[in-house]
Image (cartoon, rainbow, N blue to C red; front, side, top):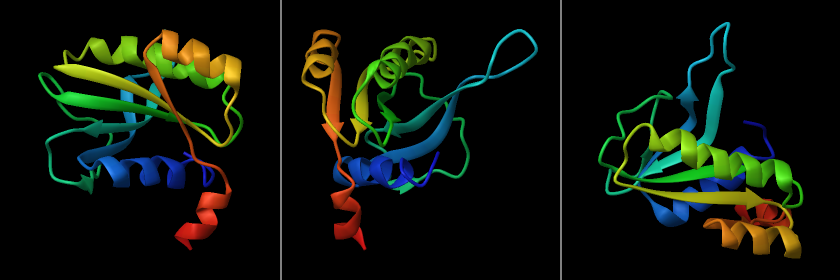
Length: 132
């Protein structure tokens, strides 16, 4: 993740709690397919901490997928949030919530997100100053 994304992911997580796995490996890359990472994966009902590693057995766990971008909510971020949920389903968690974290909202894209059960969380650049 980048310096513009990590703090947003962690700010959201700090309000939710649970075990945060950054750069969770949803798909291992090889010569036939690209590696697919989830910016953040929160496992609920676990100790609140950042996991050292990027894989974890989430079968029968309640999870929140976080995809984060610093810019305005757009199709790229929503595509990541939508398809990440489909990739995580293969791990057989008990429940999956998908969250798109961005720096600025977009009315039309947010309406589409809601229609597809993707929560949109706007964390503007100004919030970084309050963390310092």
